[in-house]
Image 1 (spheres, helix red, strand yellow):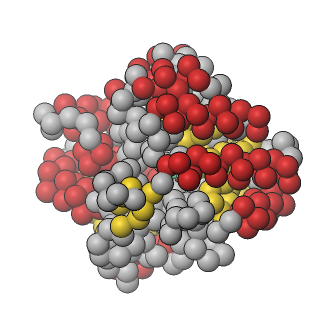
Image 2 (image 1 turned 60 degrees about the horizontal axis):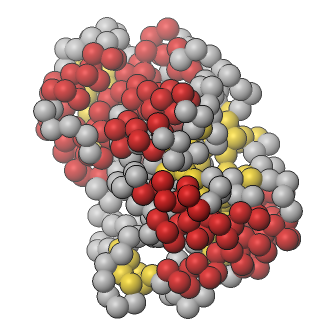
Length: 403
Ligand code: CS2
Ligand code: MG
């Protein structure tokens, strides 16, 4: 089963996606998600110029060897662009492996360990009342977990506020990064009020999550975690930038609120200390950005040794192929925690046809062979790439902060 063609397709049906298509000599086609929000063309070029020429003629069944060949062979290791490119090749090869034997990928990973994959809704609002009402809507439609994000009083814009009535929050926009202003004290004063109102109105019968989105210092994260302890959070996400893994020791000294981190990680080495010292409770690496199924599974297995559960990143800027790949891992591993899922902006469904479906607060995979997502290359051509950037954040004095 030799690879005879490798093509990278960039398309923008509602937002940009980068998809790798691999074809074998017996006509099997596999797909991988190579989308990296705001840096799509960097991954496209890495794949087209430096990886695809190496794939032609390779045995598609040698997934592990191809992973090692692309990782060690690059010499320059790690990083979001390299690992997203390797991740796309890896998922496409797993897709081919499943299609070659007529079985869904999760059955090649040891089979289902649960009936479905619990996801969380993304409630948001311009104020507390709106956010509580939005959270209630998710609960009424069967969600068992909800993330809440609301506009911080006094700030022009705040992370996580969905536009319109759709389910997807899309932060990238414009052909230059939008400049946003941030005020940590206003945020720290506000979030406990938001969370208290959600629990007062909607009770404790569901998992409640919040994303601090890298904006706090470790001590501020400890302050927030302690303030939220009465409300039994499922997690606070990205409480502080996690390059400084040791900083989480300080947060742990001040709070028992569970911590989740990892959506910007791309290798096991980014989280090895966080996991082995039990400094976090959930690891959030996204399959497309962390070297695909092969490497993400290693991260999840390491996490399992230390009682850390998974909480894969799954925003609208992970394509349905990336979401499906995560679901195959989620449904089969022992230490599954929760899966992020926002669904996708229209008209993504003209290009991607996922086999998974929503029911009772969970996503359920189909038993289609492979990853189970169909990709319409002709439809993709109808939506050419549009340069878009994630926003940047500055403090009120103009100094750069973390978005
Ligand atoms: C967020 C994302 O989903 C999340 O938890 O952190 O919305 C993130 O901001 C985007 O994926 C960045 O592209
Ligand atoms: Mg996040």
